[in-house]
Amino acid sequence: MTNTTFFIETYGCQMNKSRSEHIAQVMIQNGYQLIEDKKRADILLFNTCAVREHASEKAISNIQKTIKDLNKTSRYPIIVIFGCLSQFLKNRLVQRVPGAQIVIGTSNIDHIPQFIEEHTRKKKKILDFNLPSSSQVFDESGYLRNSSHISAYLPITYGCDNFCSYCVVPYTTGPQRSKPLRTILTDIEKIIQDGYKEIILLGQNVNSYGLDLDLKNGFEVLLQAIEQNFHNSSFWIRFLTSHPKDMRPSIVDIVKNSSIMAHYFHLPIQSGSDRILSAMNRGYTRDHYLKLAKYIRQNLPDSGIGTDMIVGFPGETERDFLDTLNIVQEVHFDQAYTYIYSSRSGTAAYQLPDHLPLAEKKKRLQFLNQTLSDIHQIKLSNWVGKKTKILIDQIEGMNSSGRTTDNQRIYLPNTNFILGQVISVVVIKTLKGKLYGELVLS
Ligand code: SAM
Ligand code: SF4
Image 1 (cartoon, rainbow, N blue to C red):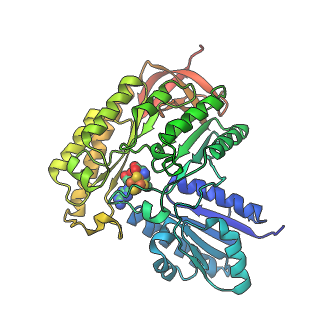
Image 2: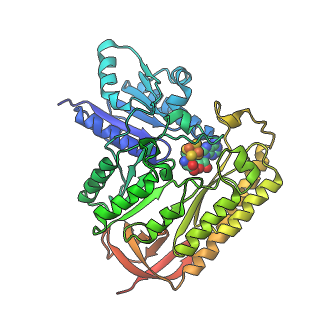
Image 3: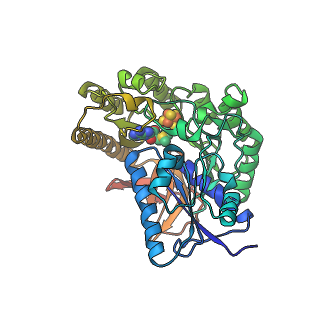
């Protein structure tokens, strides 16, 4: 056993966060001790993200500042940078953070303890930017525990084969590799034993789960196996992200007939314009998306649809943007993450002329967010008077709150509940963009 301590800082998506959990376990198994105070740690691990330039630059300056501040107090921890940004920038990142001793991409993260040992022995920088290959099995044990210990994020695939023209992920994470079905079922068993009440299956495109394992309609096979094995357990299963090109009505049908699957679909549309969708290489049309949304709304009227959208993609005209606003009005999204297009070198869209001024992109983003927010207000008022079930996952100050199966948060003005409890409530009012409810006995 060693007394060497480590700290992990994570940037980016839930997938990154769950990978950090995995690395923490690997480090602990190798005798290192996880601590929460980065100023005292002997080893600092930074798990990075490359999706948007602004966030990537911010991460680099945070890392630079951390090293500088520590060195000022005569502390010289071993600095390890790994993940998508290292994979994306490779030696350019090494040059920009000269204080880092180990810089590796997304492939050999399980070898971090060996890299640390090698660095300590040989006193030399370790760099490794091999990209994961399709034959490299994705069988990582980690899952992400949220702070309330109610929800666990469980990756079921890693990598992406879709090559949307704006996106770095296929270049930084390699081809899609699906976790073996058996491993997923064992992971779920363990997560339930650990007391979690919600499991969120993660992948860049969960609907294509199993394609690399030669499983046809593999996601349906997986969901059915989960249903068969766990239908008597009291927890909810959620999944993200559903790619509209691979989302199938049969997946909606399985969710509909299940007692454990949450009625929520995160289905990023990105744009409402066919011209832009094609330039983005998304592989579906606006009409295809609308048909999917209609199928979901008709078959599961109480379900939520979430989305991601990008404004200011190269060549996006006023007309294209209006198409996006128009689809927002048609689908009435329940949740949306919106971004200004960020040009990333190495992607296909990087080559496209991008003449739209930033001020216009910001204006479009603001307009889109306002439209989404107006619709959200209407949707919230429609909740008033409805009875529903919520999973209590936050108790703070004088309030408790929980989420419905369609991912809507409802607040309760008292704390007589237990985290993880599922209760019936009636929504009594909406105030400042929030829903408030009361317990009903039934
Ligand atoms: N795999 C998911 C999908 O296909 O929708 C999304 C994963 S991506 C890491 C999360 C979101 O980031 C995307 O849905 C997209 O809206 C946004 N995104 C990705 N690349 C971007 C870029 N270059 N500029 C702006 N937003 C981007
Ligand atoms: Fe990026 Fe497209 Fe893959 Fe999502 S599906 S990770 S947006 S390339």
